[in-house]
Structure formats: C-alpha cells, structure tokens
Image (cartoon, rainbow, N blue to C red; front, side, top):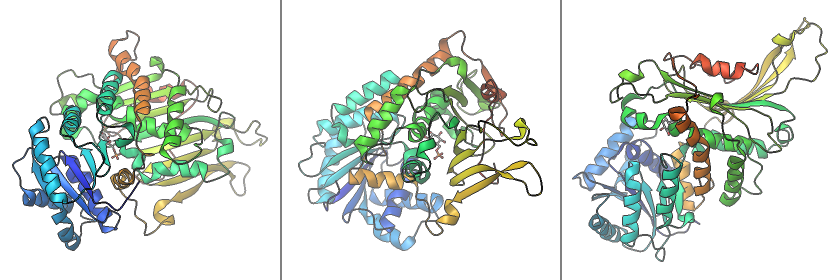
Length: 485
Ligand code: BG6
C-alpha cells in the first residue's frame, strides 16, 4: 500500500489533451491539498521536441485556461520544478531505455512509479511491451503500476487480447483500468447510500422496485472528436464502460468489505447474471446534423444515442426491467439513476384516479445537480387528492465548503495507495463487452435489428426510446431539479 518512498508519475502522451485537461489539474489540486506523496515527480513522455521548461509552460497555460478556479500561481511555482520532460517515440525501445536513464537521473534514489497511458489506444500494447523489455516493471526498488485509459478494447476479442498482452508484462494487481465515472463522488455515494443506511436495502429488490432507469445524457455533440467517435459510437463510448459501471453499483449484492477484491467480485457476479440483451428491446439513433460534422464519413451509421432494456437473472432482480439510455446533442447534461417503486397494492382513496397517481421514485443525481430526491405522495391540503412532493438532499447545500473533487483526483490517489476498488478488473471489462458486443454487431448485421432513427439536437432523444417503455405502460422518469432539466 502507500509508503514513504518517492513516487514518480510517468505520463505517456504528455502533450495530449487528457494530460492538460485532467491529469495535471488533478495532480496539482492533490498537491495543493497536501495529498501527494512527500517526494513526488512527474515525468512527461511524448514525441514533441520540447524541453522541461516548454512542457511546464504548456501545462501551466492549460491550468490557467481549463482549471482557473483552482490555479494558484504561487503554488504552481513550487509544483512546476517537479515536472520534467523525456522526448521519445512510444514504439521505440531505445527511447524507453533513454527514459529509464532520465528517470534514474531525476529520481536519484529508488522509488515507486505509476505509469499512466494517456495515449491513443493503439499505443497501449507497444508502451507496455517496451516497459517490459526495458526492464522497467520489476518491483525490487519500489512498486510499479500502470493506469490504462479507455477505450479498453473495441470489442470483446480485442479487450481479451489487450488484457492478455498487458498481463504478459504486469501482474493483475499492478494494472489499474480507469473508468472516470467510478471516481465521481456521487457515483461512489451510491454504495454508501445503499450500504450505510438501513432503510433502503430491504426494499431494494423485485418485491418493491418496479423498474430502474439509468440516464446519461449530454448536451454537447461530437464536436472535434468525430474521428474517434465515428469508429466508436455511443455503445462503446458510454454503455460498455460508464453505464455498465453505474448499473453494477446500483444492482450488485452487498460486498463483505470495501476492499477491491470484494467489490470487484460482486460486480463480476452481477455482470454474469445479466441476461443477453434482446435486440428488439434496443433503440439506436443519430442526431440530425451528425453526418455534416467534420470527419464523419458520408452515410455513417454510427449511433449517437441508444436506449436498452435489460434483465438481471438473480433472486433480487428477477422480472425487474432496467432501462439504460445515453446520447449526445440532447437537451441537457444529466446523469441520473431512477428507482421507480411499485404502486401500493390497493388504493383506498376514492378521489384519486389511477392515472393521476405517481408511485414513489428515488432519484440518485450523479451530475450536474448532485444529490438525491425521494418523491412521495402527499395529501393536498383541503382536498381529497394527493400530489407528489420531493424530499431532497443536495451536496451543494448539505456540504457547503466541501467542493466535489474531480474524478481523476481520487483515482490517481487511489492508484498511488494501491487501492483498486474503483478500477475495473479484467473479468469485469470482458463481461461488460460480452453483453454489449452482440448489440453492436446485431445492429450492424441482423435483418431484424431495429432501424436507425433520427432525433433532433436539443431534444430528449427519439420517440422510439419512449415507445420502448410505453410497451409496458412505463415512462422515462426525471426527478432531478436542475433548472436546465
Ligand atoms: C467519456 C466519453 O468517456 O465520457 C465522452 O468518451 C463523454 O464522449 C464523457 O463526453 C462524459 O464524461 P463526463 O464526466 O463529462 O460525464
């Protein structure tokens, strides 16, 4: 676990967007909070002909532009000298040998190393192989860990092969596959909410829950990422990783401890209990205008929106539909998990029409208005009818002064501490791919696959997604109270 040895963060892809946008702000914020190991260094590796000063300058500008609320010029002055640059090619072994020498020189004494693969996925294997061949993985001087960014594979076969190739060099407990949704404070709170309270768990099952809905909408369109996005589509980009992880937090059995092995065992069990999806219970859609975006090939059939219904075949969830939806260019950015409870078995109030009655709804708002809502029916004063009322908890009011850290801050510190509970294990990734792969290939190849439909940018998505729920008399629920929603 954590120790007092010096720790070096080696970032492959140091000239890229992720480093500027996420990694450096996360490391800098942790530094300002005094949470980084006492002796730490950051070594950036990339092909650009830069020197230490140039890298520092670019990262500082990134902080000022992208993380201005946490940028502190004075603190940066003491942080920047920790950063150095090693120029090299990700596929060239000699450049890794030069990196090794650079590391030995700046570190001065043996220490720990966190290798962060912040590159395009095609470089993951060459980097790992070169680290192995340059003898940079061996742990006698300190621990060696590798953080692997997404996308982790393109389908089940490539995810398996990537797992094999990384495991040929690193042990599984040295591998940290990142899914930044798991680092979100409010996603972690799902487990605390379920298992640090007594009153919810007894009703968290098929006897009380009618259906569960997971919504991850984004208002942004594909922007300048169309080159990547058109190859991926919404299922690879959002479902296989983020939505499946959120689903696992909501639906898994209680782990015996919060240790990585216990949490990840329960997740794996859950994924294996999910029934293969029925293509007929999926919706795929593309927003109007996607085909005109830069770098999108003519006639592309890449979905930018999907909705799915799935079932979990175990005692807790038998017969409870789970609905998942996600897409780009929608009305608003909103990540929300709704648990819709069953209606009371008998309504004894004569003046309440069945159709006017809303069952209890619990909404876990992951972002942007982080909090929890419980919708209850209450009697409208001086009448015989009821109306839904909201019991709300908001992070911003309950935890004034405690800002929500960015997901990368927590995940980087966990990797340094050797805590992998919020990282995905090889079997978890493969199980999620095994569920999503048939949907992707089915859409492309099956004659009876649902047709691609279009939706208007700025809407809540295609009508077909509403119809998916309407088939069983259900509707998408939305309980978070953000003004844009
Ligand atoms: C990324 C996807 O993993 O998650 C992006 O590649 C998406 O397409 C992003 O926009 C959403 O993350 P967040 O934290 O903004 O909800």
